[in-house]
Amino acid sequence: ILSNLLQHPHDEKYRRLRLSNPQIQTHLVPSWGAMQFLMLAGFERQRVDTVEHTSTGAEPEADTKDEEYLVISPTILDEEAALKETRRQ
Image (cartoon, rainbow, N blue to C red; front, side):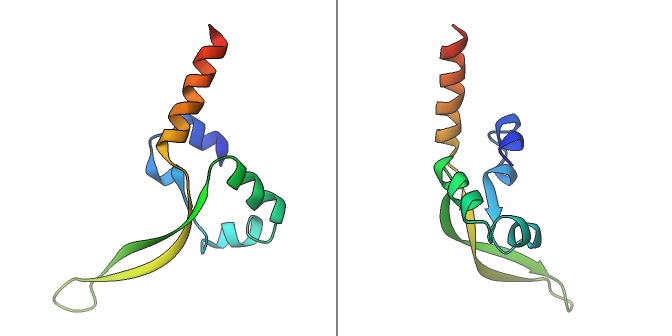
């Protein structure tokens, strides 16, 4: 997770982890240490309204779902990049 995040710091798909994702549910949520590590790395729990598009009839419909995510701000990633650059100098 962190490796992808550092390689693609401004790609939103790596900055948000949907807590209802089956892989996240299996590997991260049950592990208190893994969740604490991600929180210490800068992730925060947030409820996010997501739009899911469905087309069950002639007209496409959009359903809004309220889901919980772990989200990290791009500002935190920019600060990390600045620290790395400072270490190189």
